[in-house]
Figure (cartoon, rainbow, N blue to C red):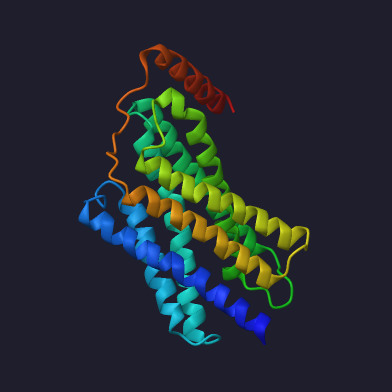
Length: 254
């Protein structure tokens, strides 16, 4: 009984702790009026906080439990994708060319999502396959991959954009990026390598999310001014326009 009791206590701690942190994050964002700067991240925080809190008081398994879980998960995945563009809007300078690239990413991302949905609908799954579950799972993995890539891009561009670690945008990207990288590693360990059980995977995923919640709380609770990047350094502006223009010309040729 002792190992089971300890495992249950650890599971509940990893479940409740990020909810407490996210409640504090939401309150601080409201108090400091950071909601106007990061409305999508605030919405994500509220959705996860309200959904997970409701699940704490619902009976598992039950129909309403599954409904709340999957609705919360689906909405959280969509907000995770939207957070990527919110962060890019803060760290990238305002430029018509960059705006065109971001809009193109939105369009291609939507097309990829529709294509993935059609593949799930038109292909036959195994016995008992749940298409809604498969689509949400695919979308979640895609969102995690993009967030991990976003964190790498932010680190790579910090010096060029004049960013420091004392930016809310960098902290939000760091939380999502680290959590996403650990979550993707867990997906591989469970799904393809079969090295961990479902219970261990859930525990590792919760631990990774706790790390993200601590990172977000650390950044949001600090009184760091959020300064948006208005323009690129003059010495690099021509190089950026030339590089992005070259890629756009290649897309048009295709």
